[in-house]
Image 1: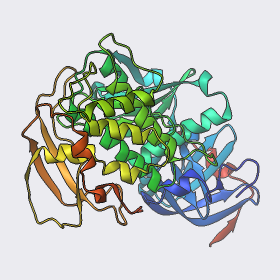
Image 2: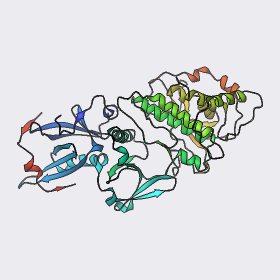
Image 3: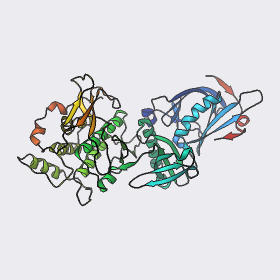
Image 4: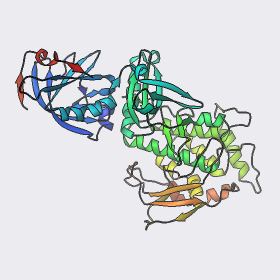
Amino acid sequence: MHDQKCLFQKLEGTLAEKLCVKELLKEQVIIYVQKTKEFLLKDMVISFNALIIDNSYIELSKCQFEERVSKPKNNEGVNVIIIKNTAGKEYLITSNSQQSLRIKIYLKKFCVNKNYSGKYRLLEQKNCLPLSQSYKKNNQHFTTLKFEKKQLEENQELQMFHNQLTIMHAFQSIPNVVRVCEDAQRYYILGESMKLQSLESLLLNGFEFKEVPIVSIIFMTLQTIQKYQAKTIYHGNINLQNIFINVNSPTLQIALLFPKYKEHNVKNIEKDIFNVGKLLYQITFYTSRGEIPQDINLNLIQSLMDQWSLPNSQRTQYRFLYRVSQLNLLNQLLSPGITVEIALIHQWFVNIKQNLKIEPKQHMSKALLSTIVEEQEFHMTSSQILDHRVTITQQSYQEYEPDEELYPIRCQLINITQMIPSKKKHDAANPSLFRSKTFTNSTMKRDSLNGITKQSSFK
Protein backbone atom coordinates (compact mmCIF):
# COMPACT_ATOMS: atom_id res chain seq x y z
CA MET A 1 0.00 0.00 0.00
CA HIS A 2 3.05 2.29 -0.07
CA ASP A 3 4.35 2.42 -3.66
CA GLN A 4 5.10 5.77 -5.29
CA LYS A 5 1.57 6.17 -6.72
CA CYS A 6 -0.12 5.37 -3.43
CA LEU A 7 -2.09 8.09 -1.64
CA PHE A 8 -1.94 6.34 1.72
CA GLN A 9 0.56 7.58 4.29
CA LYS A 10 1.48 6.34 7.73
CA LEU A 11 -0.92 7.44 10.46
CA GLU A 12 1.51 7.26 13.38
CA GLY A 13 2.67 10.61 14.75
CA THR A 14 0.43 12.71 12.50
CA LEU A 15 -2.24 15.31 13.21
CA ALA A 16 -4.79 12.81 11.95
CA GLU A 17 -3.75 10.33 14.65
CA LYS A 18 -4.27 13.01 17.33
CA LEU A 19 -7.62 14.27 16.09
CA CYS A 20 -9.27 11.53 14.02
CA VAL A 21 -10.26 9.24 16.87
CA LYS A 22 -13.98 9.34 16.17
CA GLU A 23 -15.40 6.89 13.61
CA LEU A 24 -17.86 8.78 11.44
CA LEU A 25 -18.33 5.77 9.19
CA LYS A 26 -17.00 2.21 9.24
CA GLU A 27 -17.42 -0.10 6.26
CA GLN A 28 -15.87 -3.19 4.70
CA VAL A 29 -14.71 -2.42 1.16
CA ILE A 30 -12.49 -4.01 -1.45
CA ILE A 31 -9.40 -1.98 -2.28
CA TYR A 32 -7.19 -2.43 -5.31
CA VAL A 33 -3.45 -2.58 -4.59
CA GLN A 34 -1.76 -1.36 -7.75
CA LYS A 35 1.72 -2.64 -6.90
CA THR A 36 0.66 -6.28 -6.47
CA LYS A 37 -2.47 -6.04 -8.65
CA GLU A 38 -4.52 -7.54 -5.85
CA PHE A 39 -8.03 -6.92 -4.55
CA LEU A 40 -8.13 -6.99 -0.74
CA LEU A 41 -11.17 -6.92 1.52
CA LYS A 42 -10.44 -4.33 4.23
CA ASP A 43 -12.13 -2.51 7.10
CA MET A 44 -12.28 1.18 6.23
CA VAL A 45 -12.94 4.05 8.65
CA ILE A 46 -13.77 7.63 7.70
CA SER A 47 -12.96 10.22 10.34
CA PHE A 48 -12.36 13.98 10.20
CA ASN A 49 -10.70 14.66 6.82
CA ALA A 50 -9.20 11.16 6.84
CA LEU A 51 -9.92 7.80 5.25
CA ILE A 52 -8.16 5.17 7.37
CA ILE A 53 -7.29 1.57 6.50
CA ASP A 54 -5.06 -0.42 8.86
CA ASN A 55 -2.40 2.02 10.09
CA SER A 56 -2.46 4.28 7.02
CA TYR A 57 -4.69 7.12 5.91
CA ILE A 58 -5.53 9.40 3.01
CA GLU A 59 -5.79 13.14 3.75
CA LEU A 60 -9.05 13.74 1.91
CA SER A 61 -8.78 17.52 1.51
CA LYS A 62 -5.88 16.86 -0.90
CA CYS A 63 -8.08 14.74 -3.17
CA GLN A 64 -11.09 14.69 -5.47
CA PHE A 65 -13.30 11.68 -6.04
CA GLU A 66 -15.55 10.17 -8.68
CA GLU A 67 -17.73 7.08 -8.95
CA ARG A 68 -17.87 4.59 -11.76
CA VAL A 69 -20.56 1.96 -12.12
CA SER A 70 -20.37 -1.28 -14.08
CA LYS A 71 -23.66 -3.10 -14.74
CA PRO A 72 -23.17 -6.46 -16.44
CA LYS A 73 -26.24 -8.39 -17.57
CA ASN A 74 -28.12 -10.22 -14.81
CA ASN A 75 -25.96 -8.53 -12.18
CA GLU A 76 -26.61 -5.77 -9.67
CA GLY A 77 -23.42 -4.05 -10.79
CA VAL A 78 -20.15 -2.94 -9.28
CA ASN A 79 -19.61 0.49 -7.78
CA VAL A 80 -16.04 1.82 -7.87
CA ILE A 81 -15.13 5.02 -5.99
CA ILE A 82 -11.90 6.56 -7.26
CA ILE A 83 -10.05 8.91 -4.89
CA LYS A 84 -7.40 10.83 -6.78
CA ASN A 85 -5.01 13.75 -6.97
CA THR A 86 -1.97 14.61 -9.07
CA ALA A 87 0.12 12.03 -7.20
CA GLY A 88 -2.04 9.00 -7.91
CA LYS A 89 -5.33 7.16 -7.43
CA GLU A 90 -6.94 4.75 -4.99
CA TYR A 91 -9.88 2.46 -5.78
CA LEU A 92 -12.65 1.48 -3.37
CA ILE A 93 -15.05 -1.19 -4.61
CA THR A 94 -18.32 -1.24 -2.70
CA SER A 95 -20.77 -4.11 -2.37
CA ASN A 96 -23.85 -2.13 -3.39
CA SER A 97 -25.13 1.33 -4.25
CA GLN A 98 -26.33 1.98 -0.68
CA GLN A 99 -22.84 1.46 0.73
CA SER A 100 -21.42 3.67 -2.00
CA LEU A 101 -23.89 6.42 -1.10
CA ARG A 102 -22.92 6.29 2.58
CA ILE A 103 -19.26 6.75 1.67
CA LYS A 104 -19.94 9.55 -0.84
CA ILE A 105 -21.76 11.63 1.78
CA TYR A 106 -18.49 12.06 3.67
CA LEU A 107 -16.27 12.35 0.61
CA LYS A 108 -18.37 15.29 -0.59
CA LYS A 109 -17.76 16.97 2.76
CA PHE A 110 -14.02 16.33 3.05
CA CYS A 111 -12.69 16.12 -0.52
CA VAL A 112 -12.10 19.17 -2.71
CA ASN A 113 -14.92 20.07 -5.08
CA LYS A 114 -13.82 21.66 -8.35
CA ASN A 115 -15.45 24.45 -10.38
CA TYR A 116 -16.38 26.78 -7.49
CA SER A 117 -17.23 29.58 -9.92
CA GLY A 118 -19.68 27.37 -11.79
CA LYS A 119 -21.57 26.48 -8.61
CA TYR A 120 -21.36 29.55 -6.34
CA ARG A 121 -21.29 33.32 -6.44
CA LEU A 122 -19.09 35.14 -3.89
CA LEU A 123 -20.90 37.89 -1.97
CA GLU A 124 -18.83 40.31 0.08
CA GLN A 125 -20.18 41.44 3.46
CA LYS A 126 -19.13 44.76 4.97
CA ASN A 127 -16.76 44.17 7.92
CA CYS A 128 -17.56 40.42 7.90
CA LEU A 129 -16.38 37.28 6.15
CA PRO A 130 -17.92 36.86 2.67
CA LEU A 131 -20.73 34.49 1.72
CA SER A 132 -21.03 32.00 -1.13
CA GLN A 133 -24.44 31.87 -2.77
CA SER A 134 -25.31 28.58 -4.46
CA TYR A 135 -26.75 28.78 -7.94
CA LYS A 136 -28.82 25.73 -6.96
CA LYS A 137 -30.32 24.61 -3.64
CA ASN A 138 -32.67 27.60 -3.38
CA ASN A 139 -29.80 30.12 -3.44
CA GLN A 140 -28.44 28.76 -0.16
CA HIS A 141 -25.70 30.85 1.47
CA PHE A 142 -22.46 29.70 3.12
CA THR A 143 -19.90 31.60 5.18
CA THR A 144 -16.67 31.50 3.16
CA LEU A 145 -12.98 31.50 4.02
CA LYS A 146 -10.92 32.06 0.88
CA PHE A 147 -7.24 31.33 0.29
CA GLU A 148 -5.09 32.46 -2.62
CA LYS A 149 -3.27 29.50 -4.16
CA LYS A 150 -0.23 31.63 -4.95
CA GLN A 151 0.24 32.13 -1.19
CA LEU A 152 0.19 28.35 -0.66
CA GLU A 153 2.84 27.43 -3.21
CA GLU A 154 5.36 26.32 -0.57
CA ASN A 155 4.71 22.79 0.71
CA GLN A 156 4.75 23.96 4.34
CA GLU A 157 2.10 26.63 3.75
CA LEU A 158 -0.08 24.20 1.78
CA GLN A 159 0.19 21.57 4.52
CA MET A 160 -0.86 24.12 7.16
CA PHE A 161 -3.94 24.82 5.03
CA HIS A 162 -4.86 21.12 5.09
CA ASN A 163 -4.08 20.95 8.82
CA GLN A 164 -6.50 23.83 9.32
CA LEU A 165 -9.26 21.84 7.64
CA THR A 166 -8.59 18.79 9.80
CA ILE A 167 -8.69 20.95 12.95
CA MET A 168 -11.91 22.73 11.94
CA HIS A 169 -13.60 19.41 11.14
CA ALA A 170 -12.40 17.72 14.33
CA PHE A 171 -13.37 20.53 16.70
CA GLN A 172 -16.59 21.16 14.75
CA SER A 173 -16.13 24.84 15.46
CA ILE A 174 -18.20 27.56 13.81
CA PRO A 175 -18.83 28.13 10.99
CA ASN A 176 -19.00 24.28 10.83
CA VAL A 177 -17.37 23.32 7.53
CA VAL A 178 -19.74 21.73 5.03
CA ARG A 179 -17.63 21.75 1.85
CA VAL A 180 -14.21 22.62 0.39
CA CYS A 181 -14.04 24.02 -3.12
CA GLU A 182 -11.46 25.41 -5.52
CA ASP A 183 -11.03 27.23 -8.79
CA ALA A 184 -7.90 28.16 -10.69
CA GLN A 185 -6.87 30.90 -8.25
CA ARG A 186 -8.30 30.02 -4.82
CA TYR A 187 -9.45 27.47 -2.30
CA TYR A 188 -12.76 28.13 -0.53
CA ILE A 189 -13.88 26.70 2.81
CA LEU A 190 -17.67 26.86 3.00
CA GLY A 191 -19.49 26.75 6.32
CA GLU A 192 -22.81 27.51 7.94
CA SER A 193 -24.18 30.93 7.00
CA MET A 194 -23.50 33.57 9.66
CA LYS A 195 -22.07 37.06 10.03
CA LEU A 196 -18.55 36.63 11.40
CA GLN A 197 -16.73 39.84 12.30
CA SER A 198 -13.19 39.90 13.67
CA LEU A 199 -12.27 41.48 17.00
CA GLU A 200 -10.07 43.93 15.10
CA SER A 201 -12.98 45.03 12.92
CA LEU A 202 -15.27 45.37 15.94
CA LEU A 203 -12.65 47.45 17.73
CA LEU A 204 -12.01 49.76 14.77
CA ASN A 205 -15.73 50.17 14.07
CA GLY A 206 -16.67 51.42 17.51
CA PHE A 207 -17.89 48.31 19.33
CA GLU A 208 -18.20 49.13 23.04
CA PHE A 209 -16.18 46.42 24.77
CA LYS A 210 -17.87 46.45 28.15
CA GLU A 211 -16.46 44.25 30.86
CA VAL A 212 -18.75 41.22 30.49
CA PRO A 213 -18.12 40.71 26.75
CA ILE A 214 -14.37 41.17 27.22
CA VAL A 215 -14.29 38.64 30.08
CA SER A 216 -16.43 36.19 28.12
CA ILE A 217 -14.38 36.43 24.92
CA ILE A 218 -11.08 35.96 26.77
CA PHE A 219 -12.47 33.08 28.83
CA MET A 220 -13.89 31.31 25.77
CA THR A 221 -10.62 31.78 23.90
CA LEU A 222 -8.70 30.20 26.78
CA GLN A 223 -11.18 27.31 26.84
CA THR A 224 -10.57 26.71 23.14
CA ILE A 225 -6.80 26.75 23.73
CA GLN A 226 -7.35 24.18 26.47
CA LYS A 227 -9.04 21.91 23.91
CA TYR A 228 -6.04 22.26 21.63
CA GLN A 229 -3.75 21.45 24.54
CA ALA A 230 -5.74 18.31 25.39
CA LYS A 231 -4.98 17.02 21.87
CA THR A 232 -1.29 18.04 22.20
CA ILE A 233 -1.56 20.60 19.41
CA TYR A 234 -1.55 24.39 19.29
CA HIS A 235 -3.32 27.12 17.29
CA GLY A 236 -0.27 29.17 16.32
CA ASN A 237 -2.07 32.21 14.91
CA ILE A 238 -4.11 33.88 17.67
CA ASN A 239 -4.62 37.60 17.18
CA LEU A 240 -7.33 40.23 16.79
CA GLN A 241 -7.66 39.48 13.06
CA ASN A 242 -8.32 35.76 13.53
CA ILE A 243 -10.83 35.67 16.39
CA PHE A 244 -14.35 36.19 15.05
CA ILE A 245 -17.71 36.93 16.67
CA ASN A 246 -21.03 35.84 15.16
CA VAL A 247 -22.71 39.23 15.42
CA ASN A 248 -26.13 37.89 14.36
CA SER A 249 -26.33 35.20 17.03
CA PRO A 250 -28.62 35.62 20.07
CA THR A 251 -25.80 34.05 22.13
CA LEU A 252 -22.14 34.93 22.08
CA GLN A 253 -20.33 32.64 19.64
CA ILE A 254 -16.63 32.97 18.89
CA ALA A 255 -14.43 31.25 16.33
CA LEU A 256 -10.64 30.95 16.39
CA LEU A 257 -9.99 30.73 12.66
CA PHE A 258 -6.90 30.35 10.46
CA PRO A 259 -4.77 28.13 12.76
CA LYS A 260 -1.18 27.55 11.64
CA TYR A 261 -0.25 24.17 13.01
CA LYS A 262 2.96 22.47 11.87
CA GLU A 263 3.70 18.88 12.74
CA HIS A 264 6.99 18.17 14.52
CA ASN A 265 7.32 21.86 15.42
CA VAL A 266 8.83 23.15 18.67
CA LYS A 267 5.95 25.59 19.21
CA ASN A 268 3.58 24.82 22.05
CA ILE A 269 0.53 26.19 23.79
CA GLU A 270 2.55 28.78 25.75
CA LYS A 271 2.79 30.98 22.64
CA ASP A 272 -1.00 30.83 22.25
CA ILE A 273 -1.46 31.91 25.88
CA PHE A 274 0.94 34.82 25.36
CA ASN A 275 -0.98 35.89 22.24
CA VAL A 276 -4.26 35.90 24.22
CA GLY A 277 -2.50 38.28 26.60
CA LYS A 278 -1.38 40.42 23.68
CA LEU A 279 -4.87 40.77 22.20
CA LEU A 280 -6.30 41.54 25.66
CA TYR A 281 -3.58 44.21 26.00
CA GLN A 282 -4.58 45.66 22.61
CA ILE A 283 -8.25 45.87 23.61
CA THR A 284 -7.49 47.18 27.11
CA PHE A 285 -5.22 49.99 25.91
CA TYR A 286 -7.06 50.85 22.71
CA THR A 287 -7.23 54.61 22.44
CA SER A 288 -10.03 56.93 21.38
CA ARG A 289 -7.83 57.94 18.42
CA GLY A 290 -8.44 54.52 16.90
CA GLU A 291 -4.92 53.23 17.44
CA ILE A 292 -4.33 49.57 18.26
CA PRO A 293 -1.10 49.29 20.28
CA GLN A 294 1.43 46.97 18.67
CA ASP A 295 4.16 47.07 21.32
CA ILE A 296 3.61 45.68 24.83
CA ASN A 297 4.68 47.83 27.77
CA LEU A 298 4.81 45.71 30.93
CA ASN A 299 5.91 48.77 32.92
CA LEU A 300 2.61 50.46 32.04
CA ILE A 301 0.67 47.50 33.46
CA GLN A 302 2.69 47.53 36.68
CA SER A 303 2.46 51.29 37.13
CA LEU A 304 -1.35 51.17 36.77
CA MET A 305 -1.55 48.30 39.28
CA ASP A 306 0.49 50.37 41.73
CA GLN A 307 -1.62 53.44 41.06
CA TRP A 308 -4.89 51.60 41.59
CA SER A 309 -3.68 50.17 44.87
CA LEU A 310 -3.80 53.67 46.34
CA PRO A 311 -6.94 54.89 48.20
CA ASN A 312 -9.48 56.75 46.08
CA SER A 313 -7.66 55.91 42.86
CA GLN A 314 -9.23 57.33 39.71
CA ARG A 315 -10.00 55.70 36.38
CA THR A 316 -7.40 56.17 33.70
CA GLN A 317 -7.99 57.35 30.15
CA TYR A 318 -8.33 53.73 28.98
CA ARG A 319 -12.04 53.13 28.52
CA PHE A 320 -11.79 49.34 28.29
CA LEU A 321 -9.80 48.97 31.51
CA TYR A 322 -12.14 48.09 34.35
CA ARG A 323 -10.32 46.75 37.41
CA VAL A 324 -7.00 45.71 38.85
CA SER A 325 -7.65 41.98 38.40
CA GLN A 326 -7.85 42.64 34.65
CA LEU A 327 -4.36 44.14 34.86
CA ASN A 328 -3.17 41.22 36.97
CA LEU A 329 -4.39 38.67 34.39
CA LEU A 330 -2.73 40.72 31.65
CA ASN A 331 0.55 40.66 33.56
CA GLN A 332 0.34 36.88 34.05
CA LEU A 333 -0.61 36.06 30.46
CA LEU A 334 2.30 38.12 29.16
CA SER A 335 4.80 36.55 31.54
CA PRO A 336 6.27 33.04 31.19
CA GLY A 337 5.07 30.20 33.38
CA ILE A 338 1.30 30.54 33.50
CA THR A 339 -0.76 27.53 32.41
CA VAL A 340 -4.15 27.67 30.72
CA GLU A 341 -5.70 25.89 33.75
CA ILE A 342 -4.47 28.60 36.12
CA ALA A 343 -5.56 31.35 33.74
CA LEU A 344 -9.10 29.94 33.58
CA ILE A 345 -9.61 30.34 37.33
CA HIS A 346 -8.10 33.80 37.58
CA GLN A 347 -9.62 36.31 39.97
CA TRP A 348 -10.97 38.48 37.15
CA PHE A 349 -13.34 35.68 36.08
CA VAL A 350 -14.24 35.03 39.73
CA ASN A 351 -15.00 38.75 40.24
CA ILE A 352 -17.46 38.73 37.35
CA LYS A 353 -19.09 35.53 38.64
CA GLN A 354 -19.57 37.17 42.04
CA ASN A 355 -21.42 40.00 40.29
CA LEU A 356 -24.03 37.63 38.88
CA LYS A 357 -27.34 36.57 40.37
CA ILE A 358 -27.22 32.78 40.51
CA GLU A 359 -30.32 30.63 40.09
CA PRO A 360 -29.21 26.99 40.65
CA LYS A 361 -30.97 24.31 38.62
CA GLN A 362 -29.55 21.38 40.51
CA HIS A 363 -27.29 20.40 43.37
CA MET A 364 -23.65 21.35 42.86
CA SER A 365 -20.57 19.81 44.42
CA LYS A 366 -18.54 22.20 46.59
CA ALA A 367 -15.38 20.75 45.03
CA LEU A 368 -16.26 22.24 41.67
CA LEU A 369 -15.32 25.73 40.59
CA SER A 370 -17.80 28.25 39.19
CA THR A 371 -16.72 29.59 35.83
CA ILE A 372 -18.25 31.32 32.85
CA VAL A 373 -18.87 28.92 29.97
CA GLU A 374 -18.66 28.93 26.21
CA GLU A 375 -22.35 29.71 25.68
CA GLN A 376 -22.37 33.23 27.13
CA GLU A 377 -26.01 34.11 26.72
CA PHE A 378 -26.22 37.79 25.99
CA HIS A 379 -27.22 39.54 22.80
CA MET A 380 -24.63 41.52 20.88
CA THR A 381 -24.67 44.11 18.12
CA SER A 382 -21.79 46.10 16.73
CA SER A 383 -22.52 48.98 19.11
CA GLN A 384 -24.13 47.69 22.29
CA ILE A 385 -25.03 44.79 24.53
CA LEU A 386 -28.78 44.28 24.27
CA ASP A 387 -29.19 41.77 27.05
CA HIS A 388 -26.81 40.84 29.87
CA ARG A 389 -27.78 37.22 30.43
CA VAL A 390 -24.87 34.86 31.10
CA THR A 391 -24.67 31.11 31.58
CA ILE A 392 -22.04 29.77 33.94
CA THR A 393 -21.04 26.23 34.69
CA GLN A 394 -19.27 24.28 37.38
CA GLN A 395 -16.11 22.67 36.03
CA SER A 396 -13.64 20.40 37.73
CA TYR A 397 -10.05 20.79 36.67
CA GLN A 398 -9.11 17.39 38.02
CA GLU A 399 -9.05 14.94 35.12
CA TYR A 400 -11.02 17.49 33.09
CA GLU A 401 -12.27 16.80 29.57
CA PRO A 402 -12.30 20.24 27.90
CA ASP A 403 -15.35 19.79 25.72
CA GLU A 404 -17.50 18.45 28.54
CA GLU A 405 -19.81 20.90 30.33
CA LEU A 406 -20.85 19.93 33.84
CA TYR A 407 -23.55 21.17 36.19
CA PRO A 408 -24.92 24.09 34.13
CA ILE A 409 -26.71 26.84 36.01
CA ARG A 410 -28.30 29.95 34.60
CA CYS A 411 -27.44 33.45 35.75
CA GLN A 412 -28.24 37.00 34.89
CA LEU A 413 -26.12 40.06 35.43
CA ILE A 414 -27.62 42.18 38.21
CA ASN A 415 -24.92 44.83 38.52
CA ILE A 416 -23.28 46.06 35.36
CA THR A 417 -22.07 49.30 36.93
CA GLN A 418 -18.35 49.74 36.97
CA MET A 419 -16.82 48.40 40.16
CA ILE A 420 -14.12 50.43 41.90
CA PRO A 421 -10.79 48.74 41.13
CA SER A 422 -9.22 47.30 44.23
CA LYS A 423 -5.81 45.67 44.44
CA LYS A 424 -6.53 44.95 48.12
CA LYS A 425 -9.54 42.79 47.21
CA HIS A 426 -7.48 40.98 44.61
CA ASP A 427 -4.58 40.31 46.97
CA ALA A 428 -6.97 39.12 49.68
CA ALA A 429 -8.50 36.50 47.39
CA ASN A 430 -8.24 32.90 48.51
CA PRO A 431 -4.90 31.61 47.19
CA SER A 432 -6.53 28.28 46.43
CA LEU A 433 -8.30 30.00 43.53
CA PHE A 434 -4.97 30.20 41.75
CA ARG A 435 -4.04 26.52 42.15
CA SER A 436 -5.14 23.79 39.82
CA LYS A 437 -4.23 20.26 38.92
CA THR A 438 -3.48 19.69 35.25
CA PHE A 439 -6.11 17.46 33.72
CA THR A 440 -5.12 16.95 32.51
CA ASN A 441 -8.37 -10.95 4.54
CA SER A 442 -9.78 -12.07 1.68
CA THR A 443 -7.55 -11.87 -1.41
CA MET A 444 -8.37 -11.91 -5.14
CA LYS A 445 -6.12 -11.32 -8.15
CA ARG A 446 -6.76 -9.47 -11.38
CA ASP A 447 -4.44 -8.04 -14.02
CA SER A 448 -5.99 -4.56 -14.02
CA LEU A 449 -9.09 -2.49 -13.39
CA ASN A 450 -9.75 -1.83 -17.05
CA GLY A 451 -12.68 -4.18 -17.14
CA ILE A 452 -14.40 -2.27 -14.40
CA THR A 453 -13.41 1.37 -14.77
CA LYS A 454 -13.96 1.80 -18.50
CA GLN A 455 -17.72 1.75 -17.87
CA SER A 456 -19.74 4.97 -17.79
CA SER A 457 -18.75 7.34 -15.02
CA PHE A 458 -20.21 10.26 -13.12
CA LYS A 459 -19.14 12.49 -10.23
